Amino acid sequence: MTAAIEKFERPVRERVSAEEWQLRRELAAAHRLVAHFVFVDMTYNHISVRLPGEPRHFLVKADNVFMEQVTASNLVKYDVDGNQVMESGHRASAAAYNLHAAVLKARPDIVAAVHTHSPANLAVSAQKGGLKPITQQAMRFYDRIAYYPNVADDTTPEGTAQLARALGDKWTMILENHGALVCGTSLAEAYIYHHFFELACRAQVGALAGGGELITPSPEVCEERARKFGRIGQYNRESRDWVAGMALARKLFPDHEE
Figure 1 (cartoon, rainbow, N blue to C red):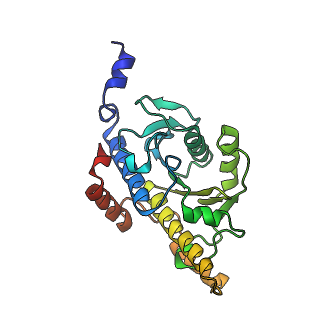
Figure 2 (figure 1 turned 135 degrees about the vertical axis):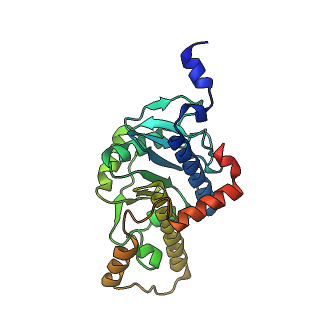
Figure 3 (figure 1 turned 180 degrees about the vertical axis):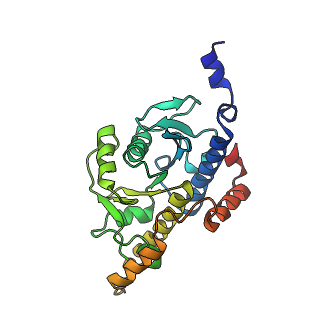
């Protein structure tokens, strides 16, 4: 048996550091929680996180599993040039590793990114004007969203590099007619802001469907709300929403840690 085959046959947990294994467990839990709270698109949505001490490497979902099926072991490891750097019997889709590699390469300050196509964010991505600041959740993102036009192919290395450039210095992007990208300085932050973004989109769809006249706060109110509650860097592993989320994942989906 060659060393390469032996390495491949050893369990993932035995081939990574304790720190990476813990991060894998948390990333698997984040996928399970998004699946639990948000209706997502088959195998085509994914979350990435940059590895501590390895800024050019990141973990992302395998291409042949739903978010409900992600485990610590079946996550895959890539570099920011889109190369798989550890064999595990799984691989990510080109759309996943190209998108996350491009964003993490272009923005060293981004640690994690969530990309989803939920019914609510798809609806908002198809509306002119994008997300409206009509709820407290939406005001967190006031004047803080980048918009990327619908193009023929945004999954190639060239297309995703263009998308990453369009993100600029923002942390949230609406991909027109496509979905959303929500980033953070930690996995916890990207997950929490994605949750708020999803709530904001659902509320907007519901408010517009109601047919009544919308109440839109003044720009001053929106900006103050965003300044207080839309700050980047305010959420981490100690944040109560993340702590509660990890506890819920352990209760409802104990197999995510495998």
